[in-house]
Image 1 (cartoon, helix red, strand yellow):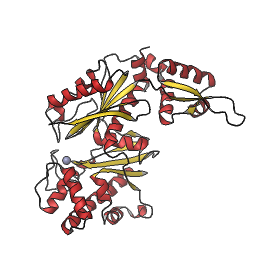
Image 2 (cartoon, rainbow, N blue to C red):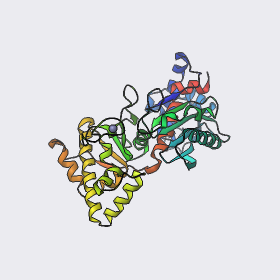
Image 3 (spheres, helix red, strand yellow):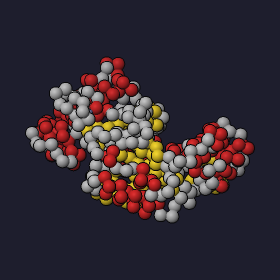
Image 4 (cartoon, rainbow, N blue to C red):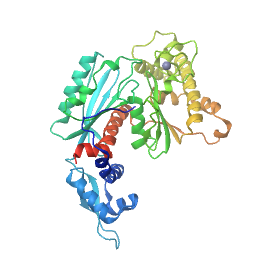
Amino acid sequence: MTASTGTGREPGRARVDRWRTKAEVLGEVRRAPGLTRVELARRLGLSSASVTETVTRLRDAGWITESRAPVQGRGRPTTCLGPCPDGPRVIAVDVRHEDWRVGLAGLCGDVTGVVGARHDREPEQVAGALREAVARVAGGHRVVAVGLAAPAPVSIEGRVSAGESAWDAVDLASVAAALGPVPLRVGNDATLAGVAEARTGAAAGAGTAVALTVEVGLGGALLLDGHPHLGARGAAGEYGHLPFGDPARRCACGATGCWGPEVDGRALARHLGDDPPADPRSYGDAVLARAAAGEERAVKAVAAVAASLARGIAGVVHVHDPDVVVLGGLARGLRAAPGFDDAYTAALMAFRRDRPVPVLDAVHGDDGALLGAAALALDHATSPEGLAEICGD
Ligand SMILES: [Zn+2]
């Protein structure tokens, strides 16, 4: 899932090792901004001297600031550690089928200053618009990485695979290159939306989580302690191409019987006898609204598609045994449809029915992939490799 386009300055192993403890400290500050030195030392099992050395180095490099913590009881004075307001930034890019968005994030991963526009899917035009937007959003900030969410499968080498779209023709490497030698990390949009849910959303704190999103087809990710399971080639998580669908139907991916085309707006259109919609997500939302208003044909179509989604989720639960399943996009509305819970429970193995794995709504909505792209860029920038590369010693 995570493509990397390096800067050509990849550091040696010894230099990387020198940044390992600093990366761990930054990880704790990202997870718990404002934590004290004392708490940091406890969490990482570091000596006071080691904390002092590491914090000083990160402060000098502009990553974190310290402020005096309120003294509690007879405790010794300590300081709180937080992101430096003028510290390094990453840029998050979310390329969607109809539009794109670009924003700026600091160490905590909140994305601000978001700009966006619709596009016509013409590769040169998309890449040019993104280069201009990335340069504009960067402004005078020190940008240390770019994270990009792509609406297509992404290989471990960082290439968008030719599949259901022509995104492989977009020169993604040039997007980050607009800023100079800044590393680019690319991930699949559904995977990155899952990362955002696992870090700060409905699956926060879950050791094992599955995130599924229905837009055009179905995408998702298995998240282990907040990190996506990528597989050998980076292409894991293609849940939409599990063969849970009609074996007589060929999917755009080239396989037959895929699950994705059974659970999106195209499936609703088939049930209603409509032509395939140009924008399956908008069409699906409209059908959900008609069903909610009581239109009988829409109610039946939604019930059939919701049942297909629910049965498939049960299958995914059997494979991964997650703490939680999080649904985004059209799947949120389908989950709320009558019959979803019954179909889910009926498809579960008996031992799971007393306490079914919870199926929850994603909380980040349409911001999920953008937040996940920021997290991806920050994961790289604050890794030992990233720090050695960025800080250059
Ligand atoms: Zn398929």
